[in-house]
Amino acid sequence: MSFLRSTLEGKSAPEEVVRSLDWSGLKVFAAKQAIVGVVYEGVKLCRQQYPELVEKKELLSWFYATDKKRRRFEVASRRIVELSEMFEKAGFRSCILKGQGLAQMYPVPESRIVGDIDIWVEGTRKAITDFVHSKTPGTFEQYHHIDFPIYKDVAVEVHYLPSQMSSPLHNRRLQNYYKSHQAEQFANVNSALGEHVCTPTKGFNAIFLLSHMMRHFFNEGIGLRQFIDYYFLLKQGFSDSEKEEFYKTVGHLGMKKFAGAVMWILENLLGLDYRYLLMPPHEKAGRFLAKETLETGNFGSMDSRYTFRERGALATALTDIYRDFLLARMFPSEALWKPVAKMTNQRWKLKDRLAGVK
Image (cartoon, rainbow, N blue to C red; front, side):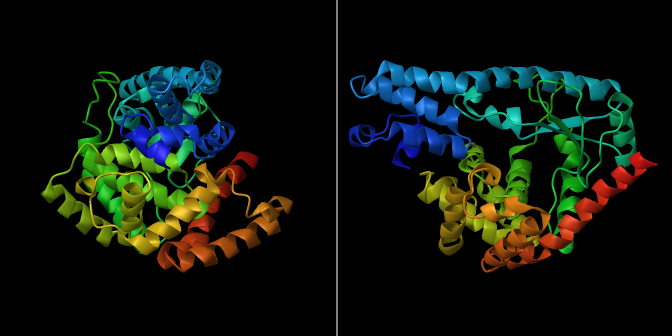
């Protein structure tokens, strides 16, 4: 973690750290946590500082590992402009969630690995899905978004809701929060991305990203990429009044303990100065969340603890119940309500599939 902390600070890792690096192990770690681009920036810094310790062929191997991802970044940058203009012409205001907006906060934007494009569109669920179906017929609707396979080179999700929570009470409060703050997001033009592209304000992102992390943590798992996103968000700086509002909001939404755990990881694993934190860290929850993050990797893609789930639907269900039981010891509300939320999401999927059969 010393290497990563130095990289995030924009400097080379200490000489003794560079000398002891297991380069192949670092590649595996970076891939598991979806931070290959960020780590590559650290490798370049080390090469500049200690050319005798970082061979040119090692630097090139990292370049080749990230080259395709950087080209994908360029593609996504063009597509978000096209999408924003497309929805604007159709009478919808929109806002790009995560992705390119967060990348602009990184010292080197293209170092952030791009996934799907998530675009939040203003309007009723029916109006949005009707528009999507007019362009890509037969796409299936889910609780908070609908797939929009309009491009072959990047996946797109159109959101009518930015994210969701498992607890019905907290989810209702979260959706009310989104509704009360949506006008500002749909008007927040990000000129660095395009004159028609909007991205969330930093205050909104502080809540949205946290809810997004929670959702994926309880469903699959999360990697360090999500924490690094939050790291650079907080480096933008928040006033005392903004921190006060954040603390009040996460308490109302039932995210205070999880937020405290995130703060602990940002300070103790990633080295973020305490003055940037939005609230005091929660050490016990932070250590628990850190252990899970390092085990699961990005969205649980490399979690070796639950390979039993690959044996079929029943094995998957039993594994999920077991994992929920483990998570409930630290975060009871979201973990215990997760099966209900999962059934709600499945209901939306089933509804569309039955409609397709008819």
